[in-house]
Length: 139
Length: 139
DNA sequence: TACTTGCTTCGAGTGCACTCGAACGTTTTA
DNA sequence: TAAAACGTTCGAGTGCACTCGAAGCAAGTA
Image: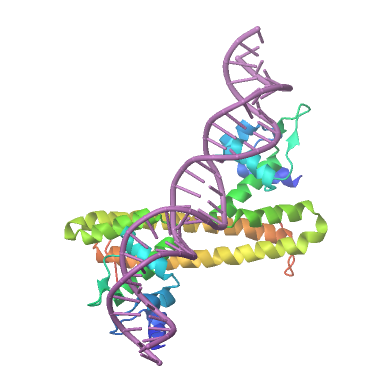
């Protein structure tokens, strides 16, 4: 639907702010079970509810989930993400700690990128040894 | 000039070729338990033994372990590494498959690097919003 | 009116990669 | 010679991040 399209494009705000759990599941690839679990463990700030108690996710929630998805890719433990989420809920006086946490994460990501580039170099050498069509270069 | 020699010179290894399990554990950071486990599941080609049956690791084993360590960093499943090790044991006729496996891994690594760089960009924006001394440009 | 979707709580199961300990015998080393 | 290191087999435990199912009820939809 248009919902999928708008989020998929640039995660720009569309104005819709009342996504049901199944919509969010479809959008994020997470299961409803996992979404409820995220909320339960505090990884997702309290989600709005309809007047009858059903979850209604906002764009903001979707952005947060996208961010969490990225952090997950870095290998950051869920516990650390929960910590960050908690700090956000605690308000302005936790700004410094939040920034520090993000900066530490940034350093980790940089380290991981370096490790991967290093691995890539080794792979290239090995692949070179197998003599690809381009003719094996030595060493 | 053997391949082993040239590799050794770039990795700081000596010409020693009879490392005990505890030496290898110290060198790699893996436990003796894990090293035996690696051998058991076929992730480590059969290790040489002393005349009394104790393991004697070679430089070659050490290199392999280093390589495995790098692959682990990429998130490659142990099963895939075992597969690659098996192919090496099977001889020359598996060259193509090995190269293909390495190339697929290379593509994965490239993808992961891209994902991490993407995450890094997001982190930089967020950190910028917290107003660091280094002055984030932004949004 | 059906049927689908959602809610809650609870606990168990999964897959991965170790990780550890026991038990007990052999080999190496100080 | 005695302690430390090594060997084997076996099975259980750990930590993480889900993942699933069941039970039973409420709400939304065609």
